Length: 537
Image (cartoon, rainbow, N blue to C red; front, top):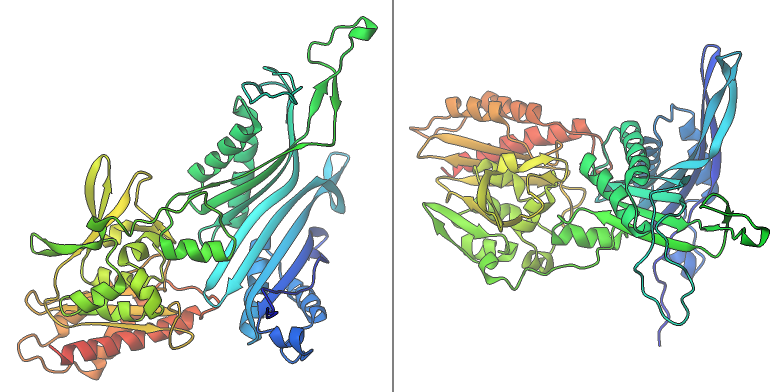
């Protein structure tokens, strides 16, 4: 049986950084424990001892200290900067994970006034952040640990399974205590980290205190639900809650009553209650990415591919109604002549295997700003059909996207289909990536020309919190095109169209590209798409 090298990573663990920020006589303190883990093209160092691609862990430590020379800010931002540095700086690194623990310090008060530069540690609780960065994107997880909480009433435990080994008495009044560890994953690597952390922590405490508990499991779910309901930027939250048992002491041998007032606090053994509360709204390809990165572990995954209604397409009052289960390959082969822009975009998706399985409906469900199908759907004024037991509703695709990886689907809805007019003129799609294939777009652009109505539609991808339209660019070019003679637009017209498309974007700097580069690339793609499409008119 052959022996092979499996998954591996390495890095520098627990670099303890203390950063003092001086603002005159007043000092601010950051106390961080930073761990870096890198994965990539490191097989040779394991197999032959060739270290030519290895970034020494001492270098990783030094990088942490050097980055701390600049303002650290929130620990999530610090982790993002570090992780993106390792992936972009070293060709051998394809994944960087940065885990940070922050210890809180408070100012010592002297005669009622906070001291400028004297601090006291605030207990054992620590704030957490873990950032994962690859060529495909950046994910942020925040959290806390060692948050010790206790409630002396409002907790019961009864009605459980009993057998010959059961000695635990039922109770309708007990102490419930735990040392909470919680980690929550953000939908996007952009958030108001401090505000979000404070809000999540407050809700966890409020739910723990206010929920009348019949079990610690019930309390865990109530706490997680409270967070997800109030914080749309959070995709899921995982909690670990050891049950810190407090047993009523039997004082009867001493002739004393004990009405749940004197307890023995046992440190071990203890019950360990763990669970994840998540949003049940992720389409297939994104689910697999999250499973591979160990970002989520759903109890079940439902395969909808056998529901034949979702895999069919037809016409509906002049529109093409395309089931959410129609694959990219099916769309290319069967609808490429009617929807050329969407077909071009579909050909850029992944590999043949992915196109044979992946769907535009799944792409819509992710609501990713980088979704390849989204720009041509925007350019063609498409609609999304949502179905539930309450009925069917349709939304313009631009209204469907509500934020980074967020959409307008209700909890009881699924995407049944999307509807789009057959092309009334030439369409184009262009995409820039960090390599030639199998890549998430750095930015993308789609154009749809309606020769009958003399209208132009546009769609921008991977250059904003949601897919975008360039409305001003559309209005400009509709007034400039020679609809009668189809003459080529002037260079100045093409250039201005590109400038307006770039101006409509709302890009950020990330591991795939800078905001400046994205705007430049969009201007170039917009000019080229317009020239190509108009030449075919």
